[in-house]
Amino acid sequence: MAFEGLTERLQKAISGLRRKGKVTDADLRETMREIRLALLEADVNFEVVKTFIKTVRDRAAGTNVLEGLNPAQQIVKIVDEELTKMMGEEAVPLNKSPKVPTVIMMAGLQGAGKTTTVGKLALKLKNEQKARPLLIAADIYRPAAIDQLEKLGHDMEIPVFSMGTGVNPRDIVKQGLAQAAENKNDYVFIDTAGRLQIDELLMDELADIKTIAQPDEILLVIDAMTGQNAVQTAEGFDQRLDVTGVVLTKLDGDTRGGAALSIRAVTGKPIKFVGQGEKMTDLDVFYPDRMSSRILG
Ligand code: GDP
Image 1: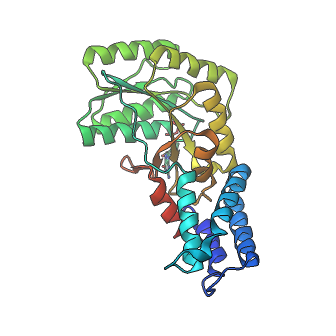
Image 2 (image 1 turned 90 degrees about the horizontal axis):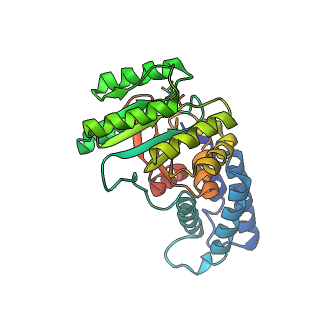
Image 3 (image 1 turned 135 degrees about the vertical axis):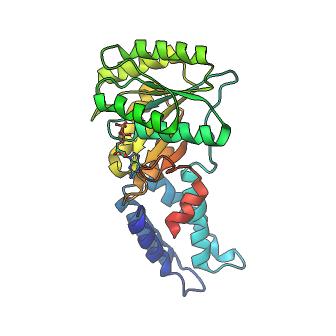
């Protein structure tokens, strides 16, 4: 399970305070040291940890005055509130265009879960809003990606626009958008190519697709299992594309959780959804407060 190690270590860090009626400076220092190590070990970004610890320490320094809660409860409450803040505080909904279609472009490294997430999101919109999305298959470099999207579309009865692998993705997007206009689709998803690492040619292509499609939403799909690298990847894509939101996938695996905790703080971009499995229904809106409660156990 995700966060298992982090939950255990945070609980242990705070348990030392449980029997204390009053927290000395030394107690607080020791607790904060352990919380810091727990976060670093969970792969939370170093700078993010530094800021977090300072904020919690400053707030906790006044804990003895709060009535009604014992010191351990007060620290848990502060850590909970600050973890929530670090992840963005509120759930942020998908952007929606005032006139149809709303265009959603996906970006991310190969294997991050772009194609799967397109399927999950399109199905969610179809089920919840009776939306009529069109999925554009613009990843021509991984032939299986087009087949995969076509199969998903077929299974979910959602149309897929593809032109095979022999056409420039920029042209596929142009023609796909024309088809969406003709068919009056209310949502368009553009499944783009990824590579194993960020490279310039890929970024140029994505930047061109952005210019052509003028998307209302650019969702960066990040594999939560990639730890520290997830933050660098997110920064790389964001610098070039100015993404509007993040989807964290594979949160059902035993990720240490650092990506979930750092991405918002480092990029300033909201995590909008989390992928929690391979099935098409395994996608959830990201609620920072619920995630924080889950982490604290
Ligand atoms: P793409 O290259 O970015 O399009 O990645 P894919 O959508 O093909 O996903 C790569 C692999 O990750 C596939 O085997 C997916 O089933 C799997 N995957 C995607 N999202 C999740 C998730 O949230 N949880 C799990 N466990 N697997 C996922």
